Image (cartoon, rainbow, N blue to C red; front, top):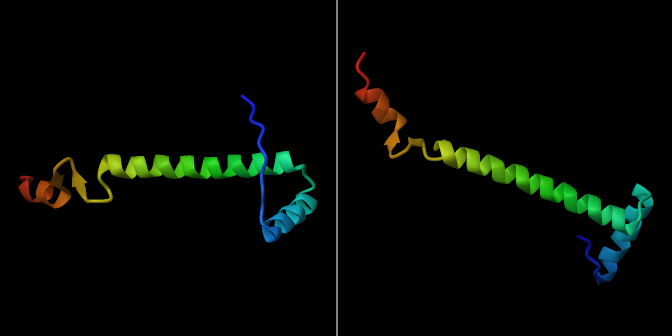
Length: 77
């Protein structure tokens, strides 16, 4: 799939874009594509981490509806 669009930037942002294009020595298309992919990968990684921690209950200290402390207290030694 390809997408063709027109972007409008404020003067300052447009100036920053021009500087980035010069520094990176890339076309507008390549720069924007790389920035989108970088941001997407970062968000995807964060979502996987959030799902991981939510799934195993590390954020709440719970495993299912039971806390680790209750499991330890009920464990017969």
